[in-house]
Structure formats: C-alpha cells, structure tokens
Image (cartoon, rainbow, N blue to C red; front, side, top):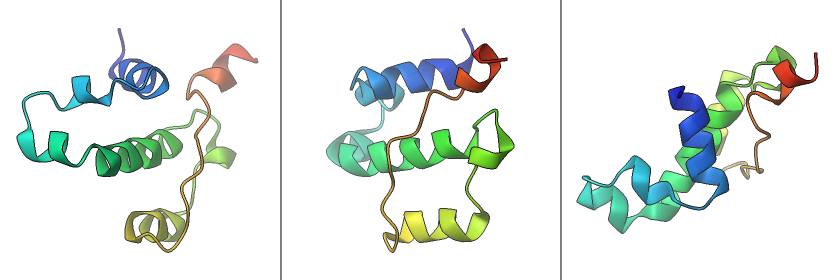
Length: 80
C-alpha cells in the first residue's frame, strides 16, 4: 500500500490515531493532526490544478484560511 493512500484512508475512516499512535503529544491534539493531514492531502493531489499555492498552505497552517475536506488524491488518476 502507498503511504498517501493509507493516510487518506485513515483520514476518511476517522482513524488518524493510527498515523501517530506512538506520539503522545500528537494523540493529545488529534484535531491539529487532522488539520495537518488535510493540508498534506491537498498538497499531494494528482491534479496539479487542485494543489494550493504555498501562500495558501501557510495561511491554512496559521489558521487564517479554513481547510476544506480534500478529495481522494488518487481520484484524478481513476478519472482518466
């Protein structure tokens, strides 16, 4: 299994704890983990037009811009 697919599956199934299971600090702030995973999924979209600009990524990390639910990163490939 590809890491990005596994991470997306963990996100979709609301099992983010599997991504950080040995990190107590991350487990204590699972909402922040969810936010960072969502941003990461946006950044690895197969379709380059879906990837956010670095300025927007920075704004998402800082909380200035809301992070919307990302699509499956492999959905572009399956639509070809």
